Length: 385
Image (cartoon, rainbow, N blue to C red; front, side):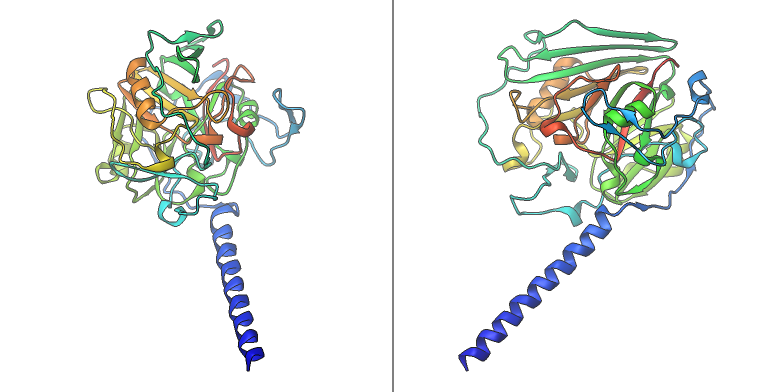
């Protein structure tokens, strides 16, 4: 009798293991197997602008990564045209399908946060280390420049990249100041030049393929199927989400809206150029820091961060904060305060953690956590346009 009970228990345990394996397999297929998605394909009302560099397609030969001992090959990629009617040439964003990705297991590699507008993916790399609770001095007046300002100038483009550290030496960050005569010079690109889930590439490799002077990670739209995705004047996706949406128009204006305020055709008519779904928005409507993001535990801890900011039409900033090393990173509250100090009128939190990587002039200029990771999309400015 005891043997029969033991056998039944073993069978039950085996059945549970098989069921778990099946569920994990389905999850992996849905979220990690590269799958092309059907885009909305709504094209914005933006006059076509052709730049000289757009006529030279990038070949798919192996390209040396100047920041690694290994060379990287990206198959099937051809970034060249900026014609927004070519659906598959735009870039990506949104980390969608948040509800399906939530995990309460503290050993998993994904972390999430809740802002005032809902559940938002953030960073996707969990650290259980104890953090210093003493406030970081984020005063811009006390910030210390750690290297000479790097400058780039081309027709319609002015970029200045500055390496800074807080006065207490605890946090390092890189700030790229960007001025554009035509906002369509601020472009985005999908990994593998393909809109869908599961397609990934590294920021340095995409920077090389895109002939970019400046490249930074986006919002990792390809990790799910929810949210708004608009790239280079094409709206690819407009599915429900509780996340803040960042909108950039051809006029140069940058706004944050909720999904309830977003109408795809109306936005296209208004000249929508880019839209990212990640968040949260870091400043209020007056450009003041937000102090309460309604998050708890690890989600309120310090992490590497990537932020895109807006001063005025044609004038933007990209901020990358180092973390999980000698630099402690910033909590969302500290990040918000820093964005106000910098002078942004709009500031939006993009994918962070290991995803936070900035490449300028073919060199990684921040210190990616654990060497960084492959992501689904980038924001970039082409060189020599």
